[in-house]
Length: 116
Length: 113
Image 1 (cartoon, rainbow over the protein chains, first blue to last red):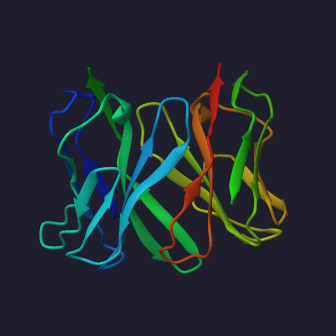
Image 2 (spheres, rainbow over the protein chains, first blue to last red):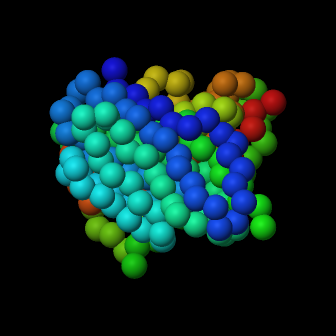
């Protein structure tokens, strides 16, 4: 079936260090799923961080980047220099077409803590 | 701008008691609506979706039901809670189906004792 595997947390990084959260997917029901990173900051709801719908393309937002790699079925999230305000839970997700249902399949989430 | 509101923010309920969680979306006409659930330590999974008033499809069977009484309202309910219903419930909307982006509400945390 369809599934997402991401870096198991919690992950702790010092401010201004680089970050990579790995995400690999298996999409058996569709050849080219949409790929998403969502983020949940403490006390807030789930927010869209970035989205890529075309294999080979890169999405970016708030200093984060992720490239849709169909060959390795990966969508790793990277940031060159993290800030304390980046502390949150990050979710990788597949967007799978179910006709009228825009179904998302999520990874378990990676909790990131950034130390000052 | 679209806003999505969920209520209550958190609930502590007894096993066997009824439950009703709500979600309203303002600023968007005829959205697709979704319920997701995440058990503690588990993965967010889609429970229901609705493309129009009065029409709800079940994706996962969890002894829960959902209804869409108005265009901007989505309700999740059960008459008898189980311990396994504990977790985090999220409502979401999208413009259409297919692979449209979904936008989420702040969520409701439920603890069943």
